[in-house]
Length: 327
Image 1 (cartoon, one colour):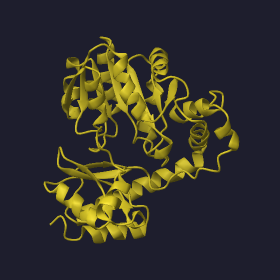
Image 2 (image 1 turned 30 degrees about the vertical axis):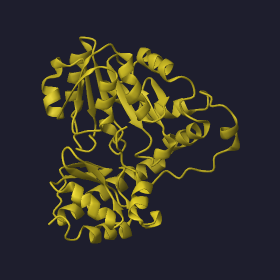
Image 3 (image 1 turned 135 degrees about the horizontal axis):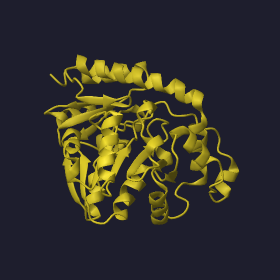
Image 4 (image 1 turned 90 degrees about the vertical axis):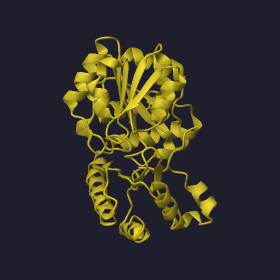
């Protein structure tokens, strides 16, 4: 299995520093989660039912014509490659490594490259997998560029897969409203924007035939009853959503300024994180761990991703932890 952020307990055990003393910036999950109310007993007691309002809330939030709830976008990432015959697949890199891993494991020929190279040679692929905005590089794509790639791929039976796990802070950039047409698959996650990573909930927006095949592959009850209940509430809370977006953008800009002040100018980022290439990234990662600050380390390229500190005290902690490290 591939490595991921969020291994706070392991870091605490390895360093001997109690969990309560850590500043965890390793995941890119919003530090301000949607306030989940007390879950009604019926959500625990009864089997999940599709008529519970979740689908209506998701269709309204994403603007999608058709979608399928899944156990986090990770479930779809693993299952989608099983729904195609052997294909030549272009996957954005650097990016979320599970995409390339899943297509390779299913027997497809996988080429990893920066988005610019993939989009310049779309004809060479049967499937193109992009992340928008990219994790960790922060790449953004104009809608007409994505539409053109989709048209080229669909014309010969191909797919454009767009992972929009980090797009909720800029919903106007989403392709979800266009995902009912054949050949376009959009993956969404509830974990990042709503701060509900533990719920393991996401959605696939695509054309009905693909969603039917994916539903058969994944089986019934992809989400638990309590998760369905909580996610429906989060997707319907428009006031909270409107308030959360400017907070994320402001904190991300503040984080970028802090990193620049310490000689770590970001090479990319989003409303949820900043990403810094550095030849000594592993050394910096270890030094920050010794100061109870957990970041996400990438080996190729050598880099660190910093999630958002939740408050002024956390920004001060990061400021102090970084002093003299990157020089």
